[in-house]
Length: 296
Image (cartoon, rainbow, N blue to C red):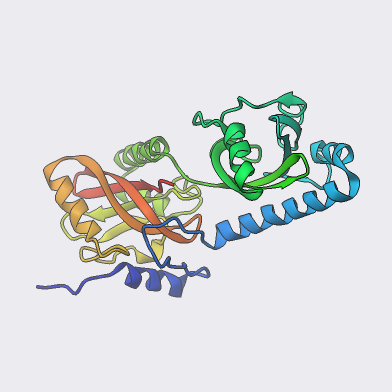
C-alpha cells in the first residue's frame, strides 16, 4: 500500500492546531533563523543596551560603570546585564561578574570554546561601530555554559554590550540524554518510559532537547516530547522541511546497525524556528530512541 508523503509542514500544522504557539517557518530552512522566543530575548537585550547607552551619554563613563556593576541596580536583570570594554581591552564594567572581570585587562579573554572574545569584539568594532557577536559563556541564571549573542555599540572610547543566551544542547548533552532514556526504558518498561518522555516534567525535556521514540516495524510514534499529541501517528512517510524522508532513513539505519545519526532540518522548540538538526538514534528491541541537537 502506497502512503502519501507526510510532509514536515503537515506535522507542523497538526502541532499548531493543538499548541498555543505555532512555529514560524524560515524561507530558507538551512539558514540560521530567529524564532519567537529568541526574538523576544534579543529585544530585551536590545532595550537594555539602549538604556545603557543613554545613561552613558547623560551621566558619563564613571557613573555609568558604577551603575553597570551594581548587581542590584537597573542594569542587571538575571541573565541580562551590561558589560563595558575600553578600546584597549580593559573591562570597566561587567554586571555578570563585577568582581571577577570588571577593573581588569581582558584583552586575552577567551570564551568557553577558546574564542578570543575581546580581540574579536575590538576588531569588529573598528569597522562596525554597532553589531553583534556570538560565543559561549556561563549563564549566571542557570550556571551553565550556553551559546550567547551580544549586541554592542561603540560610544566614545568604550564598547557597551548586552547579550542573551540561546539554549542549544551540545552533542555530548544529546548523547547523555539518549543514554539516560535508553537506561530508563530498559529498567522501567515501555509504558512508564513513554509517559515520562512525553511529560514536560518527566525529566527528559530541557530547552531544545527532548526524546522521541518510533516503532521499527510500524513507524508509529510511541513518544515525542516536542509534540506528545502526535503519539500513535504513522510517520514513515514524514519528510523534513527540505523534503528528506528522515524517518525512512532512521528505520533503514537501525536495521543495519544498532545506533547512528541522521541529519535533517526541523523546528527548534526553544527558538521556534526551523534549523538544521542532527539526531542521535539507538535501537532498543523494536524501537528507535532518538535525541537531537541543533548545531549553530
